[in-house]
Length: 171
Image 1 (cartoon, helix red, strand yellow):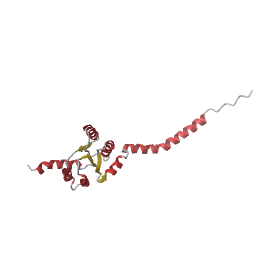
Image 2: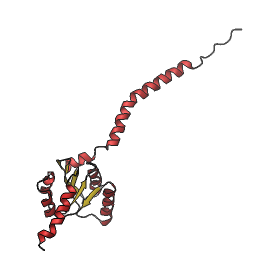
Image 3: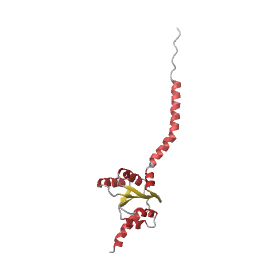
């Protein structure tokens, strides 16, 4: 069996992993300890993100002709790829958190919903709050004026209904 035939299933695995993915992020991981890598993989797995180390040539071949081809220019050195099919930002959030805490771990680049993003753009996107946080902030800002108005009306009503100090009775 030729080497090409042995590598073809791996190329297909990578291609199927990125097919339909909302985000794929490349990271350089050289120097991670086993404990750090285990914690990272666990957190990514719990978030539904596939994280795996492949040979750069196999990733380059799998990316050919896809929207992820822009990542090929970063395929030198020890790289790993994190692929998210559900949430386009969750992988960046988790990986960015580890990149800030671990000096030897860094974001290289990624493709988010078909758009290439460099490391700086990935960090910027990771700092965006989640959808739930943004919705709660929106609801809070909508609700704040109404709540303040209700509080003022209540205070006025309490002030008006307070018993007035009785004048001393004339004798």
